[in-house]
Image (tube, rainbow, N blue to C red; front, side, top):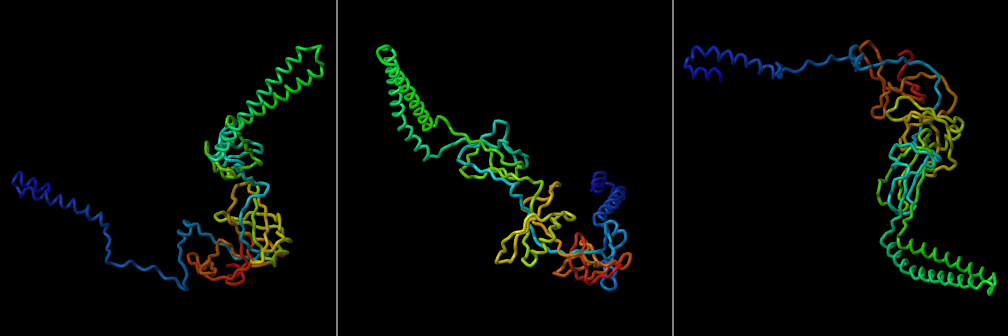
Amino acid sequence: VLGVSLARRRRRVREVAPGAVLLLVLAAPLVARGHGGEDHSAPAPPAPARAGGGTYLAKESQFLLGVRTAVVAEREVSARIAAVGRVVPRIDGHAQISAPQPGRVLAPTTGTLPFLGDRVRKGQVLVVLEQTPGAADRGDLRARSLAARPGVAQARARRDQAQRELERRRSLVGIVSQREIEQAELALDLAERDLDLAGQQLALFSGGTLQRTTLIAPIDGVIAEAEISLGEQVAADQRLYTIIEPSRLWVEASVFESDLARVRASGAADIRLEGHPGAFPARLFRLGQLVDPATRTAKAIFEVDNADGAFHPGMFAEVSIGAGAPRRSLVVPDAAVIEDGGRRFVYVHVAPEDFVRREVVLGARDGDDWSVRDGAGAGE
């Protein structure tokens, strides 16, 4: 464009033509770079085939991917009972705080409302509820307030009459007996009490004083659920807080009745969580006495130390329970086992850069290893 413009302006086409050619030449490589220079009509060369259906993986790729190998070796393996468990809080480490009456949420005088994840102490004030009656209750209170007002007036009149009678008898000292004066004093005292009680009832029915209820933490723990906010109107029996003590939790597992004796004799298990490497040791806390007639299983409760916070109530877990004396067997790592269509495979390292997929038959799992019955030999 610049060349043509100069040609028209100066009317020297022959002198400007080299400039136009130069610009076109400079523009041509820019178009070539955007394409990349590939020949899309030619097919990509095929990957080299491996004999025996193996998989090729260069040493550099093995290093970058962090591929590790382990030798099939023999060691003592304990028989295991596998079960699915669920993490639950301990009974003595779990508390739910509900509203005993309808009311409005107020902050405790010692501070703000506890929030999710806050640690609380036993006896700590959590929330204050100020009673707020509903429409039907307000109508009933109004009717009772109107009925209580005559009672206050009558009690005041009786009090005034008893006071005048006491003053009259005191003025007649020497004429009336001391006993009559004491009786007048007692009558005045009773009349004043009746007047005070009638005044309290009138104030209660008139809504002059709203009842406040203080809710405290029954255990030490952490706020697991907080379902209220400041100033919120809550109903009676509405759940406000859930507190758990997370340092020690339970794992409930269902065990078949045929395995109950071995579970009781073992008294220990390994607990595995999704996304957490390795197993967590646990001890048998309780073994249920009732067998479900539908599933023929009983509850086994294992206690686990949760100092590192890996367990959370509601999680599912794999429970591996020791059952029987250990015996020697060939083992492969659990990390090397691949499941595909209900079958299990391992990759055998047959050459520095060659791996062969092989189906294996596994036995019991002990920790991070599986006993292998067929498909892999010692030293592989």
